[in-house]
Image 1 (tube, rainbow, N blue to C red):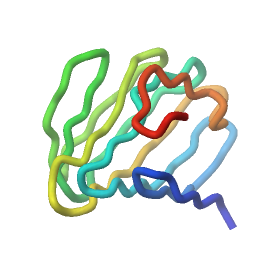
Image 2 (cartoon, helix red, strand yellow; image 1 turned 90 degrees about the horizontal axis):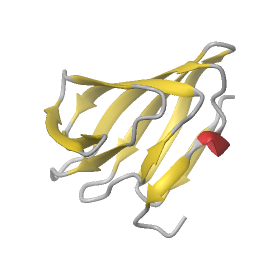
Image 3 (cartoon, rainbow, N blue to C red; image 1 turned 120 degrees about the vertical axis):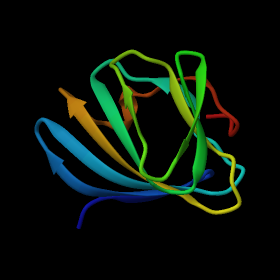
Image 4 (tube, rainbow, N blue to C red; image 1 turned 60 degrees about the vertical axis):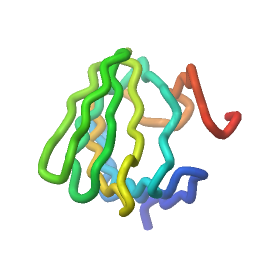
Length: 113
C-alpha cells in the first residue's frame, strides 16, 4: 500500500511512485493552507479536481478553480490556500530526482513546523 498522511491542513495519499516521478491526491480543508515552501530536487504540476483556491508562486497569487492547473519550477516558493466552503482536491505530479518529504524548505507555516 502506498503512503497516506493526515496533516493539519487536510490529507494526502500517494497514487503512484517511480524513480522519476510521484503522483499524489491532496485534500485541503476549507480555510486552511499549506506552508509557503520550495524544493531543490523536484518540480510540481497541480491539477485542481474540485474547489476554489488561491495559489501563490514566487509571491504572485492566482485564484484557480476545478479544471485549471499550475506549474511550479524547482526552487520556486509556492503554497495553496483553500478559500472556498468545500474541500479543495488536487492531483500533484512531482518530477525530478528526489521526492522525500525532507526536500521541503518551509519559509512560512501556520502550524509551527
